[in-house]
Length: 119
Image (cartoon, rainbow, N blue to C red; front, side, top):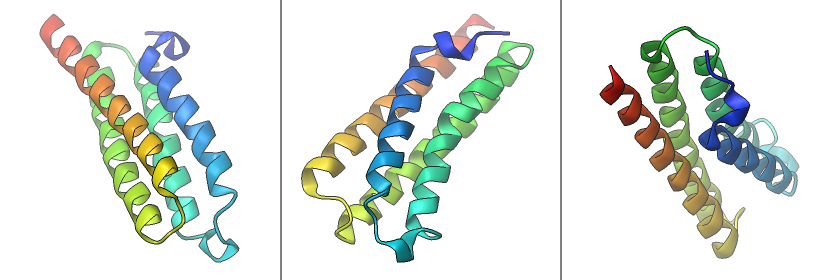
């Protein structure tokens, strides 16, 4: 078992989730159960799956949960694009959030590769 709080990818994903919760507060109320909820759900799923994987026994299970987190990050990447294209995120915010999401995806991919190489 690993302490998820000590994983840099978890820290980055957690900060991204906090940022997105704050940003989505400005979205229109009619999006509360639509895009706002989807963004929040996919984003919070990333650090949640990292934490769950760290609580499991063995690197194979951790890698499986990291893969799930990677899928959630890809889902988030699309939701951010959609929010931008709908005019809910300005260009600057979109670029920053998209870049941070891609960085999390790269970190997850590296972590998964490291775990597989150690087997």
